[in-house]
Image (cartoon, rainbow, N blue to C red):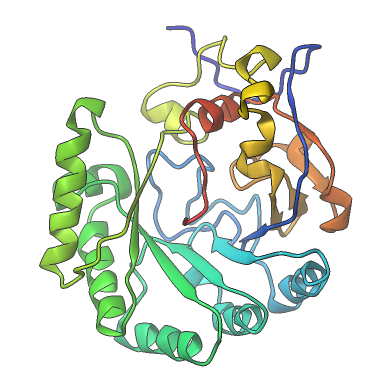
Length: 302
């Protein structure tokens, strides 16, 4: 297999462009690329030492929240890195829940009893919803920790228990690092795991593997042919680029506004200093765009 260790864009006359239809979803790389673990498949290569994108301050995020109110944003997402490493996360979530629903993508390891109670207090004080997504990549300790690091599984499960005890229904987000032939069994085992810790209304989101970042070293990069072209779409049948997530979302980091949560390591995916500057079409010129289209990837919770 021919692999490409770079995600440099390839723009040709056949490169499709995604329109900007509506500013529905705003993402924040709230802890930058700083994480308390180093997952082998991370598409951004987050780690305790990766400072390519830095922590975002409450004041910085507040400026984008204020701008978003006039743009019709319907929901807000906080990711990283590990969001709960940001010491201002509580104030940031309070500011956000004053204007709309919030979703936090976390490895769950830092959610102790008192933190789960604090999250419940924030949720109960708002008219909007607060969802917590926990990243796990296997239903058992051995399989998960092989990818995410020793001891991660137990601490993540403990975090889920603490959330459940405070009325949350945490969502497991799993990257499909297993053999596709095992899909049905893996999904069943995840549901059984949730039931075993008292979560009777299971919520599971399975994501495809993105062959960028750390994943290139774990398995491989993309094939040289893995770029989208206009021929991949059928707008006449309702299968045009406009159904992709990037037609209605943007990602904010400490460095500005990017097209989506996946491409923040690509400088050419940076679209401006504020949200308004980013509300324009974007060329689907990256190999990761191929995964989004072929696998129907959406980073949203719903």
